[in-house]
Structure formats: C-alpha cells, structure tokens
Image 1 (cartoon, one colour):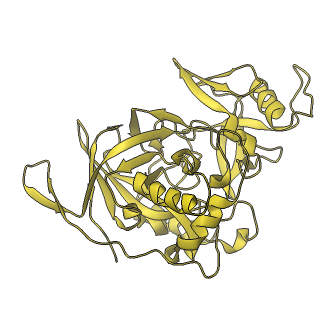
Image 2 (tube, rainbow, N blue to C red):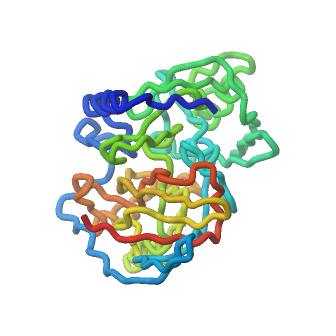
Image 3 (cartoon, rainbow, N blue to C red):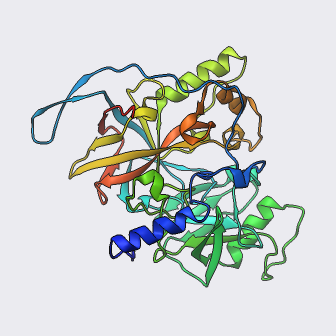
Length: 364
C-alpha cells in the first residue's frame, strides 16, 4: 500500500484547521448537532446516569526488559474480529496483522447508494445477513437465497468518489456483478436484468493511496489512518462490559445479546465492566514487538446494536437499557459502549487471541 505522510508540522496544523472547519470524521460524528434526528446519530437521552467511577486496583506486571512494573489492569485478548465489508457480518479470526489503518482487510469494502453516500445497517438492516468468508485470495460473500459473490482482494476497477460521514473519499467500483448482487438482496422487489447497470447500490473498495485521517482533536495530534471505518482504526471492548449489559437485559426480562452486535475488533477478558473506558492505552505482548493501542475516544452508539445479526430484525431493548446507565459526558452525553483506538506502537505486528494485555487508568 502507498501512504502519503504529512511532510511537516505545517501540514499537521493545516489538516487540524481543516478538520476544525468541517464535520470531523468520527464514529457517528464528533459534533452531533448537524446530524440530530438522523438514524446515524448516537443515542442521547436526558436524565440518563453518567458513567460510574471505576474502582482502582493494582496488579503486577513485567516489562519487556524484565523490570517490575505496576499495572492497574491485566487481561488477555479473547477474540478478534475483522469486517471486510462495512456493516456486513464480521469474520472472527485467531490472529490479524495490525496495519496503519487497523486490522488487515478491515472495512476495505463499503456499499453506497446512487448518490455515492455510504449505506449501513441503519438504513438497510439486511446487510447483517451478508456473511464474508475468505477463500485463498478471494473474499466470498454469502447471503440467504443468493449465489456466492467472489471478490478478488486486490481487484480495482474504475475509480470513483464516495462519501462517508460527509467526507469525500477515493475508492474503486467493484463492478456490475457486485452491484446487482447487493441490489437484489436489499431491493428484492426490483428486478435487475443480467448485464444491465444496477440502479440501486454499488460496492466500492477503498483506494489504498488515499489518506483518511482520524480527528486530530481526539488523537492528540497523532496521525491515525482509516479505510471505511466510522472514524478510528480499531474498536476495543471488554467482555465484562457485555456481561454487565446482559445482566441488565435479563433483569428486565429480555434475552442476552452477543458481542457481534457491537462490532468490536479487539475483545478483552480479565477486566472489570467498562475498565476500557478509563484506560489511557492497551499494552499488548506480541511475539515480535510491543504494541500499544491508545484508547482515544468513547464509541457513541447508534441503533445498530438493536439489530439481531442472525435475523436482521431490530428491537429497542438494547438501546433502551444502555440509555439508563451509559451516558458519557466526554461526548456530550451520547450513549457509549467500547473505546475507539489508534496504534501508538507496533504497526506491522500480529495480534493473536491469548496475548496478554495491560494498562493503566487515566482519570484526567
């Protein structure tokens, strides 16, 4: 992949000024006033309780140099997920390479409408039923009642411009076969003649030469690149946080839900509920080098977690339950679940299930 690196501090200041003058590229947005009332907007409810203070505890750890360190939390990576097509089902993997844009092949493809605007489960819940599978160098998409669709991982057809969260991004159209396939899934009443141009949706592939940068205010001025992520390269979530939500759901007479609804990349076990909210970074012990993921921004939640990934049916109990206790003042009271992360160290390393993770709380 080719990446344009900002040449100097002047470029950095210019980019920061550009971001301050336009809508930031954030997960569901950093500034929410311009999307209020939209299905893309994060959940905000007046009167919801703020996040509770986390109880500090100390556990012993060892640095790579062998000296004793004290860490507030210690756990392991329990699950890893990659989402090759934005808003379609994820692929659970045992290991993944950490690239400049996040986990390898994450959010490489995206669906757009006739205007070139990105399309997600917010508008089309049936995207949840599209299941990716890797077959050699091909990505194969499966969906109920459809023949498999094969996509070469490096195929690039005609260049196009598409929009995601108001930002114009360079991409490559994936061709008529993919357009017809998705149009049949999402608009089954509309017939598309073989060989004709589909009138509904287009699948596009991210242009690896294009630089899409996370909001510098949240990253502390650090450059963090994305493909078709909502705004940050990696999403981190603790299993204990899901367990706590599921207990509340059961107490309210509802069924527990799976972690797939929240679409994390890195899932951690060994933490207390919502420890990830207050960690400054996650330090990961890999085979070759140190990896540090900076936890830079709470992840505001839109209604997508209400959608059952097995049926594509939406029901409000997840959002209703989160509204009770997950309002976060750091994002103007939006309901959050999980933390957006950027790679501070270790690009090129391989993350694996079972690797040890450590971190310290930051209550500043």
